[in-house]
Amino acid sequence: MINTHEIPPEQWIPFCNRFSREHLGWPVIVEVLLGTLGTQPLARNLPFQGISFDTKGTRPSSVEIAAGDDSKTHIAHTVELPLHIWLANEDDDRNGTLKIEPGDGPPVLVHYHQPA
Image (cartoon, rainbow, N blue to C red; front, side, top):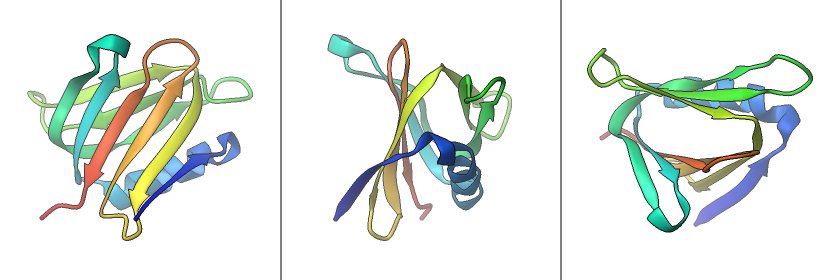
């Protein structure tokens, strides 16, 4: 069964710190949702490195998603002014998707699955 819920803004940093620790090295697909163009891949099956926040001011002003383990495959994608973070995952949390919605610009999807 798929469970979907929004992460409250006051829990973003502890949630993403825990998520990053628990899923470090798991294969991820990072995509940007571009309206009528659909999803545009940024990374495919790269090892997840983590999610971090720039915490200037009273709320996070940007979030960075990192994947890849060498200079040839490493990506770091920044989402400016995040408004919502959603998690959709299976009961066993072996597969799921994080959706980060910015104030302006396309949402970003991080699909993860447990390594074989």
